[in-house]
Length: 252
Ligand SMILES: Nc1ncnc2c1ncn2[C@@H]1O[C@H](COP(=O)(O)OP(=O)(O)OP(=O)(O)O)[C@@H](O)[C@H]1O
Image (cartoon, rainbow, N blue to C red; front, side):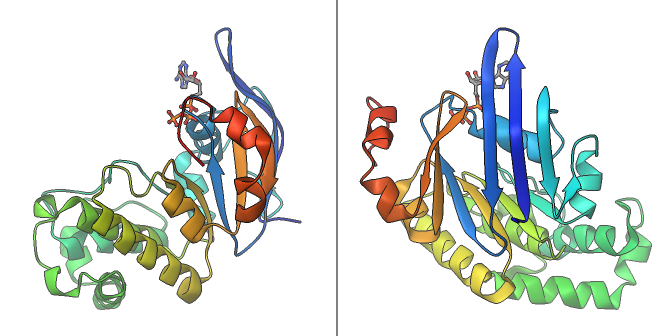
């Protein structure tokens, strides 16, 4: 049984069927990419995992427990974290403060944004945040304001904010969108290292096939709201259905 099990999920927006009978089983510890042309339903599916959308029918289970009906915060608390396309960081705060907030939230079970006096007194949390920032290569920028970071460094910061919560499953929505090739390659290295060190299960939605084939051990291809093929990168590369789904779109 996989860490995440999706069964018979359907989701419509008015007359548009964004997800059409989706079944997925994500193996624990794996890096699983979900790819497909624009509008295939990838983000809608991710939003069903994190409580932003509720499927019309079907089930989503994490470690055997249904995620449906839980709030995004509750889903976060059970060990599912998401890294967004546009990094969601507090631009006015330092890098260290940005990482201390989720670390504190996980420990105390609440988002104590008002408790700065208290936050500052948390030596253990501070140490953990410093170590995580060092892990993602930002040790020399602890007290910089995060609003001034490059896009690649913002992504690193967001990964540190995510990993400091010790999630069991990380959902990455186009983690390299808008990045230069150099930043993309750095992010690939970082994510690969994270998998080795932390063993976290990852689901990656990505259009950049260089990123997909560098990281994923398993790939599911979506078209028109439905998974049409699943397999290893080699199987996916040679599958005629995948080429057909992408006709006129990205090259696989
Ligand atoms: N909130 C919404 N209201 C109405 N339609 C929506 C909504 N969200 C998504 N859709 C539609 O559902 C379909 C699937 O969209 P979705 O964003 O999940 O695709 P995607 O595979 O993530 O695409 P992309 O790769 O371009 O991000 C699209 O036709 C989209 O226009």
